[in-house]
Length: 307
Image (cartoon, rainbow, N blue to C red; front, side):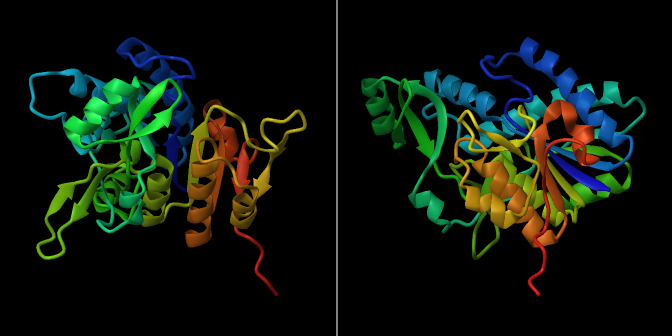
């Protein structure tokens, strides 16, 4: 099978951990071990989150007085792809001796007229006190939003239209290479209508939706969304929560999972299954092999045809 694995933000940084090279190097061993078991039997593409790393770089860029303006968000995203990509490549090479492994800086095309640019929702960077937030908003033209601990920079989260390096990923897969790509949802770019020239967008693309788009473009057989819980849960946060072992796209959407929790993963899985007729699953990183073989996780399958 051809499998796209989407690593959640808690893969390289567990809950409560702060970003740092030593922490991430340690955690990547666990990631590589879980993913390598699948690579022995399947063509494998690995995507990953970058939220904590992007926040750190954005804060550093803003605090640095030397440049006139902070580094654009698309270029900061590119930096995180290189940082996380090299860690994953090293870990996977150690776990898969003799196997080709490559990390690819990847761009995600979005529509310049996506309504998300008028309704920013993605929080980036640290929380600032009100006076600092007002200063940064005035200096850089940022929009700020209330968040725990203060106010944070908020940017657009447009929908992915296509992964520009998809053909390159396909060629690498055909040579037996394990490919790390689409990190953080990919570097968001828009295309000039007249010339086709690309320019970076001050935005972030949801990593799970980007993984679903990549899986669709690659004609993958399976989309595997990994996080730090073994299943999606019905009635999450209540004493009588129950694991959801399988669901259709319609059932996932009807459950209305929270946007800051399982919502993006549920939507990504639903979208991939609807568009391709293939399977998706959501579950724990350490159970990756068991999830693909039907022994763990929440399986998302096509609905039965209406007779």
